[in-house]
Each structure stands twice: as structure tokens, then as C-alpha cells.
Length: 224
Image 1 (cartoon, rainbow, N blue to C red):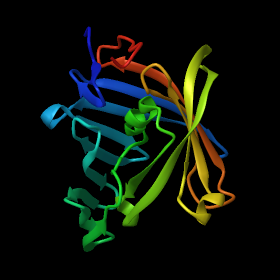
Image 2: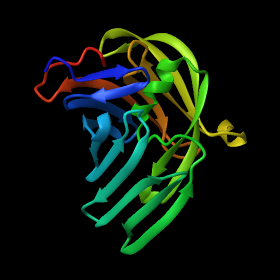
Image 3: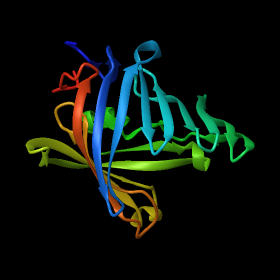
């Protein structure tokens, strides 16, 4: 599998499936998170994540914009789909045994995964507004990514030049919540995170890239 991923300008193209594995550490203990990236329609991506018994699928176009997010919890039977419709997102499905059909206005690009901020990282722009979604909470949230510079960090015992990006919310609320993400400066691959997954006082979750490989196990040294 000689070529897994390459870019054309700001666009990204996946030619063969690849797997990204991250180790997470928090006060609750240790866990792992695994993403499967596969070629999607029109040169985009299909990103699958199985975590704590829940399945998520994110479908992106060739410019890394999210067009659809699916959420399925087999234990509860919850099944939801968030889909871009012009300048809005439409959420449909079932949640807690009830039918859901809601629309949310879009003010900025929609990124269903932190992996997709790659284009912003490589652009050198100082900041960008974007939406994230949580179908299971019936939420669409506007966030701001702020570029904080390039530094050398340790990832798996290797020194890596990485772009540090701060995620926060616009306005005064940004004083009370933020998370940090590090992307490899050479190609925008997410390599480390320090996330606050809740309100003030919520414990920080640390994550680090463990492996980036093709499905045949061959290591991916660069996103080309």
C-alpha cells in the first residue's frame, strides 16, 4: 500500500483505508480511540469511530467539509443522522424512544471531527470559526480555533514539530472553556490533545497518537 493519503491544494484525498489509534488518559483511567478512514464519495472521506459501544460515522467532501454525521447506540436503540442542507443542519432519527426532526442554522464550516481542522492548520491562518455537532445531545455548537505557534513535542518517544491550536467558544464564554490540540507541522496529522469535555472543573483528558497505519499494518509516516 504505497500511497494512502495525499492533498491537492487544500483538498484531501484518501486512496486506501487507514487507521489512526490514540491513547487517552484521564482521572477515569486509560482508554484508546480508533478511527478508520476510508475513501468516500467524490474524493472525500468516510470516518468511522467505535467508542464505548457507540458507533459514529462522519462523511466529508473533498474539501474536508462534513456533509453527514451518523450516531448509533445499539444498547439504547438511539439512531440519529445530522445532514447539511444548504445553510442549515437537519437532525433526524430516534432518541430515547421518540422521533427527532430539528434544524440548526450554520454560520461557519461544519467539521464533524477534530481531524478535519487539518486544512486550517496548514493554511497558516491565525484563527477560524467552525461548527461541531453532538447528535445525541441535539446540539450544534460554534467554536473558534486559534493558532498558537509551532513547538517541538514528544510523541511516542520521538521529537515532533507541531502546531498548537487552542479551541474555545467565541465571546465571553471563551474565558471559561478551552482545549488544546497539536497537529504535526509537516502534514497536519493530529498527534496530541488536552481536552476539557464539559464545563469548568471538568477533568482534562490527555490523548496521544499511538499508531497511524494502513489496514495491512504498514506505518504511515506522512499524510501525502
